[in-house]
Length: 280
Ligand code: ATR
Image (cartoon, helix red, strand yellow):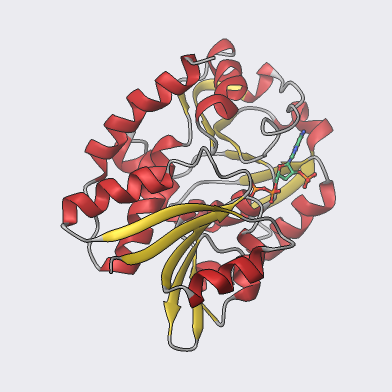
């Protein structure tokens, strides 16, 4: 029987992860079965247990389960432990081992695919949930400059800034006061605002000549922030599709020991994503 893998979250039906992992498996000649399983916070523990009982050996975890995944694991890699969020689970003899490949996935997409030099970039991170927590340490490790975190609920930004433990470099500020913060060379939307609400308009004053705007979402959810980035003259506007493929490749490597070639898969999905956006 082929090895069983799944991605858990809600909503999950539009997830591209099954397609991505099927393509990687084809490249590597590995026989695997990867499905999307709908689960919310209330039923995730039971659904994950049922998956393990049925032979599941690896899982990805997405919105809104990344924190719960770290809590349910019996061991954690430092990348999941430091922020308490996981996107990858590996079945071990004693239970699930949790890891987080979001941060390295984003940094690889920005530096390898988009050829950005992140070093010294004054960075604005909008959002302080699971997505923001997953990427912030990797951005700091990649050498960004000062990191300002703003969030709808200010206490969550304070908590994230405290967790990062670099008070001279990481600052939390009120979202409402963002206009006073000046220009940023990297502006990251890590909110889930466009999956259910809308992000209040951001001021043009954030944007300078070299500004790069990044949305961790892709497809329709990324459209408003990408449109803002273009309208305000950002140098680059990058959605989360590349990060999705790169984090998947890192998860694949944890499960199978080989890192797939992501470029062909990204190119194929870019066409697919464009089709999704234009479909009504
Ligand atoms: P994810 O795993 O995608 O980060 P999450 O942990 O639920 O999901 O976090 C969602 C993030 O989007 C949070 O920072 C949230 O702000 P709160 O901490 O105030 O909940 C933010 N967010 C969600 N909807 C938003 C909206 N309409 N405007 C601004 N921020 C929003």
